[in-house]
Length: 116
Image 1 (cartoon, one colour):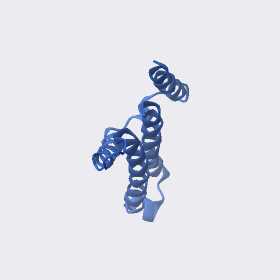
Image 2 (image 1 turned 120 degrees about the vertical axis):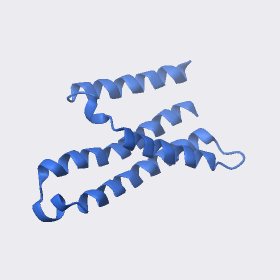
Image 3 (image 1 turned 30 degrees about the horizontal axis):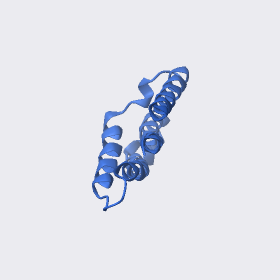
């Protein structure tokens, strides 16, 4: 029972912090979420005998988050606005989305630590 109470507290704290920081919508990006979940699930499926799939999922989520950030930075740096114009009106929203993947990765890792 304490495990699920801990998960609920974690989710509420993160949600309230997001809401007080300006709303929940900047923290939601479907493609970033799918990217991190996909890598986390793929990592969990590679668990050997005796390994916890939940722990593997959490570890894979963190790795997926960092991979997503690196991919996002490469995509941002490769755009015309980044190279020629330094258009911050275009770069900052793209950077915010790129930074969501480590956020999701660590969030899933914290939840998986509670479940394991």
